[in-house]
Structures are given as structure tokens and as C-alpha cells.
Length: 293
Image (cartoon, rainbow, N blue to C red; front, side):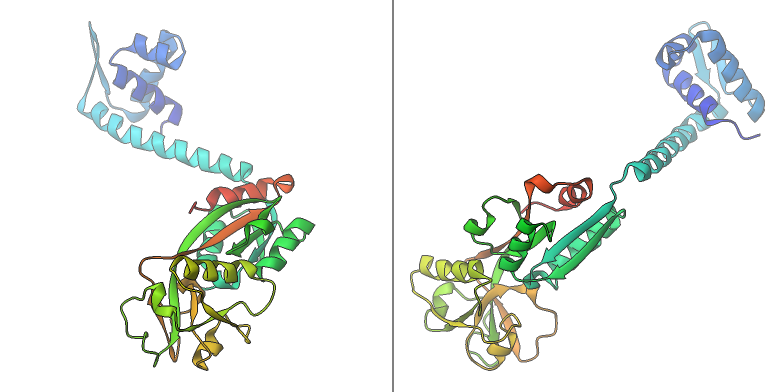
């Protein structure tokens, strides 16, 4: 007969205390029913588990084995019970998320996978858009959460936000560019280059971040608004300029171009933004899983 978990729990308490009286106090029960439970367990297993002495109890070899395996069994049973309870208490709901195209290859897929695995009750509807459009949609309630790239501080006013990751910048150049074979480049190496920046008014924070980084390095950059909506890829291939961007925006296959790290490191931030007055259990679950910085 397989004994009840209750009896094994009682036995482990007695074995650990080495005394039935102390074990009864620990279990908040009287001594006689505890002694009866131990005898019942021994009868069900048809073994002697404890030797009674004047000082308490001592484990038999069978009792020592049951103590070891019983602890493992109780830990597993407690874990199963906790997992079952967690399913009932797990947050559910729909969260509408906007994603920056700059996050499409590295950061966004990892984040979505993590949310799916650890918050399975939350349905995430995700779409790509520019930072400016996403933040307007968060304010208007059309999005619950935005993963924005280099958002300007003014556009975050009135919203709750946190830096999800500050990504090291790279220089994206054509593969026949003199900088393409370098192990790294300094920002000052770009002082004579044309830097491709956002081609429209919806990503002012990115353009401002590029210009500010160059000015901090001691030069005024020559910029060109990217005429193509593809993160500078086509314009770089056409030789119109180079981009200061993040590697997470690009896939492993970049025919005709190269990514060169920047040294000293310059970072560009990805920021999560949401309305503080529109929190939900589902949104809180996603925010709790988002790593800081």
C-alpha cells in the first residue's frame, strides 16, 4: 500500500526532531495521534522505521532511507501544489505592444519569447511602428506598452518608462568602405563621413542622439535624411553614407555591408513606456519580466 503524504510528512518531522513530543509541537498536534500515525506508516510499509529509546527515537536503515527520499518527495509535492495554485492565480488578458523596428532581430524576439514562456495567460498583440507614433498611441490608449528606440525626454513626459537596455552602437558601412575591415572605429573617425539619420519626423530622438554623440566627440556631423524606410540598409549599399546604429536591428545576413563596433563604447537606449494610470495585471506581468538596463 502506498502511504499518504500526510504520514510521510509526520515521519520526516519525527525523524528530524529525534523526539515525538518535539515533532508533535512542531506539527501543532497532540503526541498520541502522531505516534499512532507513525505506527500506521510502519504497518503500511511493513518495516520498522524508528527504534524507540529512553531519549527519543533513532532511525533504522529503512527509516534513514525514507527520511532521505521522503524529503525529496515532499519538496516535489510542495512544488507541484505551488505550480497548480500559480496557474489559477496567473494573470490573463490582452496587452497591445508597439515595437521599434530597431528591435526586430535581437531584442524584440527574445522579449516576446520570454513573455510567452513565463506569462502564458497574457496574449500579446505586437506591431512595429516608429517611436513617435507608438508613444502617441500609448497616450491615446491604442497601445498598452511601447518598446521605443531613443525616445526624446519630451515625448516621455506624462508616461511611465524604464530603460530596458542600452545597446552598444555600431557603424554600418558598405563592405568596400575603408572602415569596413577595422576591428573598431572611434566616433572621430566619422567626422568626414555623411551620417544617415531618420528620414521623417517620427524618430527625432534617434537623430538627436546621433548628433549629440558626435558633438560630445568634438565634431559637428554631416547628416543626410535616409530616403529609404529600411534602417539605412539600402542607403548604405548605395554609398549615400554610413549609419550609427545598433546591431540588434540587423539580421546575420547583410550582403554588401558590414557592422563595425564603436570604441570607446557609445550606447543607444531601448525604453519601455506605458501609461501609469492604465495598469492591469497582464501589463504588470510583462513589466515584471522585463530586465532592467
